[in-house]
Amino acid sequence: MEKKDKNIEKEETLEASREKIDKQLFSRNITKYGFDLNPAVSFSAGLIIIVFSLFALLNLELANEYVNIINDYIVTSFDWIFILSSSFYIVICLYIAFSRLGNVRIGGIYSEPEFSNFAWYSMLISAGMGIGLIFWAVGEPLFHFEIAPPIFESMHEKHTSLATTFFHWGLHPWAIYALIALALSFFSYNRNLPLSIRSVFYPFFKERVYGTLGDVIDGLAVLSTLIGLATSLGLGTQQINSGLDYMLGIGFNEYIQVALIIIITLFATASVLAGIDKGVKFLAGLNMRLAAILMIIILLLGPTGFILRLFSNSLGLYLNGIVEYSFFIAVEETAWQGDWSIFYLAWWISWSPFVGMFIARISKGRTIRELVLGVMVVPSLLSFLWMSVFGGTAIFINEQGAGGLFEVVENDVPVALFEMINLLNIPLLSEIFRVLLFILVTFLVVVYFITSSDSGSLVVNKITSGGKMDTPAKQRAFWAILEGIVAAVLLLIGGEKALLALQTAVISTGLPFAVVLVAMAFALIKGIEETRKRQKRKRDRRKFEKLIEMHENE
Image (tube, rainbow, N blue to C red):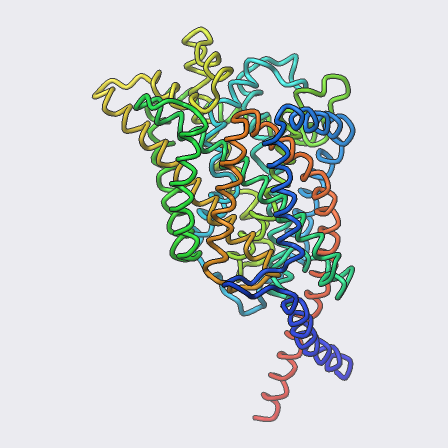
């Protein structure tokens, strides 16, 4: 009993030491002009973004040449890091979920979930995939169907194209998000550390994470998040512009897209100021409902039987070949894997600080097993169904039209979904109904744009403030506006080429963060095991006290 009392006493002193560390960390913040920022983290990430943008603005061709060289080098030399590390994340997440560590509750044994299951899933899906699911729902399955991936060169079949798409949008990206979400929520809510990336490494480096080392980790996370968001927002703006041009003939150029970014960023800023409960939660729920309506309409109007059979066959192929998918590294023909798998994995990794921290913020009260399986399984299945409905319909229409839809995808991916809807067989009130579907798709992309922007802004704001839960409204608005500016500048300095350059930057920032995530996994296991033992000691102590009380009352 004496040993247990010493352990409990040690736990109580931990909270006091955390308060002291937090005070030291926050004392470094700049708190002037309505801001509350860690200068080392904020200025370093911002400076790199500004230098990159100015360099590209002054000499776009040279910038593209450099980033292409970097991209080729990373893809050919470090592809194995992305492939093996992403598979490692799945193994670690499943190990934690199904081990005794999975019973640990985020926030303590008496903590309860802050949001309903529907609101929780809505927010994490909107943040985790969002615009990408709409942008690539038609294009990617068609690409893989017409140009077979190296792993399936001898199997030019419909279900192999969707199985490959499932690999890019399934367990691997969501395991990345689950790992970082679990690590952040655990160390913030169970160990009483600031909600920041640096806190995950406390078991290894102790108070040093609140110095220069922590600034480097958080700075890399902010840079990675801003680049990943800017790429997604740029692609989303192109699709919105494509939809408006398809319906109204307004034209398709970077100036219209910049105007759209300005307008939508204003709405995103308003949502950020409203906070998670009123802003992000409402928009995420709206996203889920609109997406479900659109998917059901396409499923019913499209080749329903073909879609469901394709979904079943593709899911079986994906599950049967997941080990081969997870460890396949191209030896000779590396272009396909670099353009697709490596880019996607790097993109998910670059998004992981943003998505992981956002999921952590909304997951208090859930057990570790519930968080891991909830983040990995449900969104993956919904993504598979979404890709099957839209990708399956696209493949069916493409075959009926002698490859006409694929020609559109090759030339203009953003307009592919609108063209697919235009080719659907709609018997009654076809033109009016088609226009309504065009409007629904465009509005859905806009709402996803706003949700990604405001949730990303909340996360970047939290990291740059050192992990503070409450920050000035002006500061939250600042990051929302900056994200819009970055996307707009990159569109202005080169349109599509600038976005391709930024995608290369995603791979560049994803590489070091892939290694950071591996280290994070080991820090997480160490921290959870320590806390599991502490919670067990608390439960044992309460049981012992109850026994003493019952004995005294007899």
